[in-house]
Amino acid sequence: MNLHLPAVILLLSASAAAQELEVVSTTPDRASVVADPASAISVTFNRAVDPASIGISSFHAFSRGAGPLPGSFSISKDGRTVTLEPIRDASPGEPVTVTLGNQIQALDGSTLRTRGHQFRYWTKARASAMEFEVIQAITTSAFPGEEVIPYGGTATDLDGDGWIDLSIVNEETNDVRVFMNSADGTCRIDDFLQPTNPVGAVPSPSEAADFNLDGRPDLCTANISGDSVSILLGNGDGTYTPAQTLPTGNGARGIAVLDLDGDGDLDIASTAFYSSTLVLLYNDGSGVFGDVTNYQAGINGEWSLQADDMNGDGLFDLVVGGQTQVRVLLASESGGFQTQSTRSVNGRTWQLNVADLDGDQDVDVACVNSFSDQGYIFLNDGDGNLSVGTNYATDDFPLASDIGDLDGDGDLDWITSSYGGDWFLFENEGDGSFNFHESFDSPIAASCSLPVDMDNDGDLDIVFVDELDDSMLILQNSGLNPPEIPGDFDGDGVVGGADLGVLLASWGPCPAPCPADLNGDGVVGGADIGLLLVNWG
Image (cartoon, rainbow, N blue to C red; front, side, top):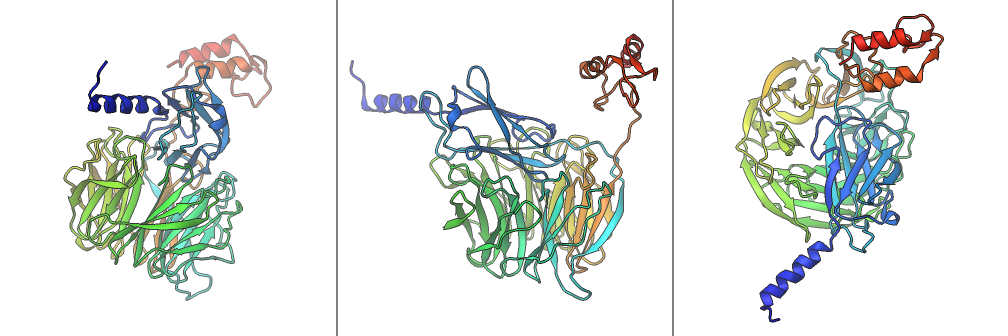
């Protein structure tokens, strides 16, 4: 049989593609914003997986609030679906990032592609009326008059006690100060731990991750005047080891965490504003960063930065905000990034967020633009192409943008922080359009917000940071407390099979307190089933 050379090449290419281990589906779905915080994480491949290739270095998950989600692995009977059962729940209303390394191998010897696979989903928050009460105002200063300039920080459970703590980044004192949650359900935090954690000069944006895969949250900061990035490895008790600080170029402004090379550990991308470049820092797997490379994003004055899968191919892409533009850079399987979409904005893109804002399971973009007193929403067509932005008026000089499902209705709301004014809360209408909901007064300068469940009641509270007042405000979300339904033992608002199972498990004599004893006679029996069935559905 004679085959032309192009046909041979096509056949060989098809054969090579067929030999590659691929991800077919995930549970929860990529870009979902309503996943159960207690959900197991399952990945289905196109062929049976070698169990020996599955472990913490090749398959791991990180919840922004709860931190690393270690657990046990199981594999389906056909060998194609790998499930991680975390030992702890993810925190509600937060993103969870799942990373699969290229070490994963099929039983037939084929491997996952060189750049691996990543996906992110968000967990569901409890319903809330978005009625907020200031519970605590706390200083970030060590003594009266100390100028700290807290720009922002991260909210992550640092000691594994199930309560979210705060790591606040301070531009004047060049350190990170840790405030541990009081862990009493009041939404309050304790005074910061001392000594503090020194980093490079004028640290600003920060991201939490588990860089050495030891199950403890770590932190990285971009240091503006230090022209550097600092990495702090967590000790698991609220403290960090001394920082590793690496030079990155002029004016480090944005920072994002992703697996750049597919080896399963998390690397860092940062922006260098004055050099108009991106800087890529590679992790050796132990949380030590060595190789630093520059990448031209092609826009002027790279400032803000985020990473997520913008086109659904299982690779984390980069979204970069500059002086007058927002650009999507798609990761290529062969390495590097390619420009996919560029949109113009008025004013410098100080900060941006990425998540599904309109419910179509594509990752969209929200940003704020300082000099124009505006924020923008850019919707994604699924291929990484951004629509023309819809702009919203903010207070004077917005410099922080944050998102979270503050009313628990299944879509992500939006908070803008304005240095020359206050915090604005915009409510998502479900389709990616937003309505102004409320303004929150700042002591001096609204600088950052952290939507996070501080009191463990399932809805999102808010931590506001004021960099000129050197303080934080913690606002508790009132939530919604619907009347209890007799027989709804799992509290999901529906009486069904799961509740019947709870009742049957308590069958017979059941001394108080006994939730399944609906008629209170000390015995779980037929009368209780009757009461449960009355409320069925």
